Image 1 (cartoon, rainbow, N blue to C red):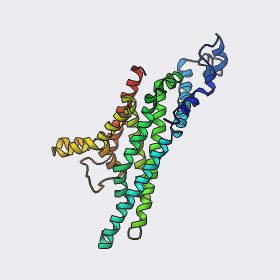
Image 2 (cartoon, helix red, strand yellow; image 1 turned 120 degrees about the horizontal axis):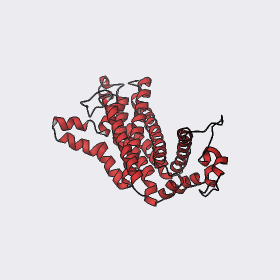
Image 3 (spheres, rainbow, N blue to C red; image 1 turned 90 degrees about the vertical axis):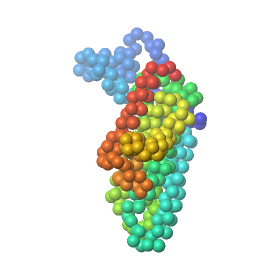
Image 4 (cartoon, one colour; image 1 turned 120 degrees about the vertical axis):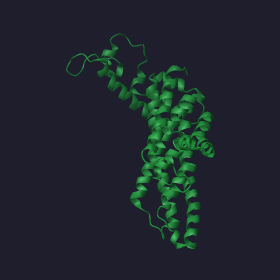
Length: 315
């Protein structure tokens, strides 16, 4: 996969890259925290392991996040996925906008400002969330596929830092995709519907940020899934089932308890959150913050499983 080794170079060429791990006694005292054993603080008093370790952990996470950003941004596939998400939302909004315009022309009373948020939310549900799934799967499984993860973990032995950096970068990209795709959808819809129903700009801004937050949480969830499974096809399959497949099957059962449980799956809970309510094709039995909490719960659970699996299993 093109660009994968870029992240590796970023990790090898940092200032710590000159230390091979075979330094002579006394070298650590001269190199301070970056060398791994700063003995005293600014006042000359001995530093505790916690005092020395906290800045080092933060610096490691910052450096690893920078390296991960270089790795992901250097992959053409990352930007292809982002472009497909934007194009998909634009095409979907154009189709829905034309349909909405036809309804308005037949009956002017059909003009509804809520159509902007309803239709863009459907675009997120049917298209954008799967682009985020692909982004997270590429980020979390790519290095396992070509075995370059071995070099990554040799350079950064703290596997929790590697997972955290990968999650932060993927969530940031997903947030941007969620916000920008909402803007694209509203803009395209406005070209069809705006003369008959004005855009509520504050509401659109809130929905854009909500979509961005939900897409970021989906990225956290699927980076965890991908890290645990270490398989791109497996991550795609499980992601599709969590977002769409299982909720649909559970609803078909027509059993009340199972239907209520389906509403807590990440896909349905997510759309209920970022759409702010009824989206025209699905009405959740649960309203309010419970929908956001459901998505957060899935994301946290996936990260816990991923962190545990990454620590106990060899690469």
